[in-house]
Image 1 (cartoon, rainbow, N blue to C red):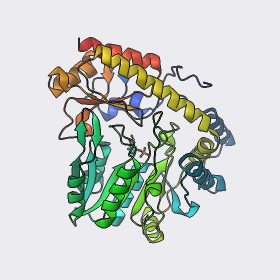
Image 2 (image 1 turned 90 degrees about the vertical axis):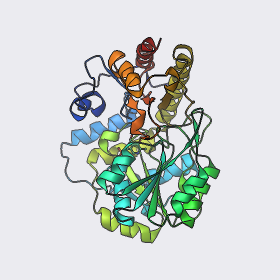
Image 3 (image 1 turned 60 degrees about the vertical axis):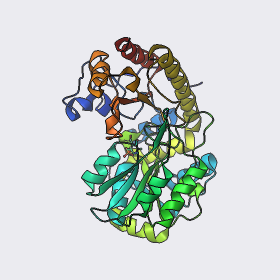
Image 4 (image 1 turned 90 degrees about the horizontal axis):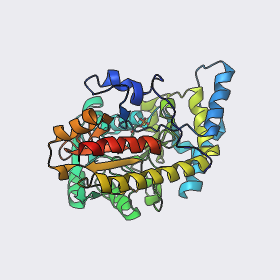
Length: 392
Ligand SMILES: Cc1ncc(COP(=O)(O)O)c(C=O)c1O
């Protein structure tokens, strides 16, 4: 492995949300100089060398004016990446830059549905979807619960279809691969979801922002590959997560259907990247594939380590090996404690900041915790040791 992912790089005092922002964003949170933050889904690893070099080139130019992705490599690199990595053919004209996946999803909801309409999600799911639906866009959350079989989650098809069949439920936000449960959806699952949506005229908004982070033996299938009819699909992708450039707002929205695309674009307007964004995205897709492969290998190692450690030292925690993402979805119910007690032991006594399960599943998330293992093995070990100590 060429990259040393074991290196610990100080991130405090760098405007990082995970390392600095929590203090002001969550003033009630337990937080001090020794806290190990594993809450926010970004990585404590240095970016790929090609991305670093691209950032230096842009910085050295000394002018950072209004920017547009005029370099044809911006779109070509995305098309090439999907061809190479996913055997999926995108067309350049389907793609538009978006300053984050959340803003593209918000815009899709606002453009194609009315305030008050139901937006379907499959819980547990990325908690911010809740805030977007009933806060930012004034829609109604319609949750279908995934079936939890000892930590492995599958779709409740009857319930999903029943929710899609309600005429006021107008869109479904799919998280693929799924944060926080780590599922990489199978072809037949994706096809079935898409077919149900189409049958009931439900817009399918696929958030595939975690697509490049998959575990050994699994392959992410883009929704556009899973079905031929793309007439009701809005896809959100990007280098944000996979290449650890979320602070550069590197996302894209892909809409194959011309009519849908034109309506969306009229609403979305002129969404401008920074010069750093464009350069980072091209350097990621064109020059950093080997780095990404190594990253996935390192994350596999972190997961092996964490699962073995948990089995031995936190034996009452139920956890499945994730198929994708760098997250573990930990079920502490075996300890017979309340959600508050579990929280206190981890956040205050162990001084490790995870994310409470209720953020991702308000109904069934109590005593669950999401742990982002996107940090060096040494720091991961330290965090697990501290937590295990409290559950002896
Ligand atoms: C599933 C999912 N979608 C969207 C986001 C946010 O992405 P962005 O920073 O591109 O808005 C996250 C961040 O954790 C996520 O996990």
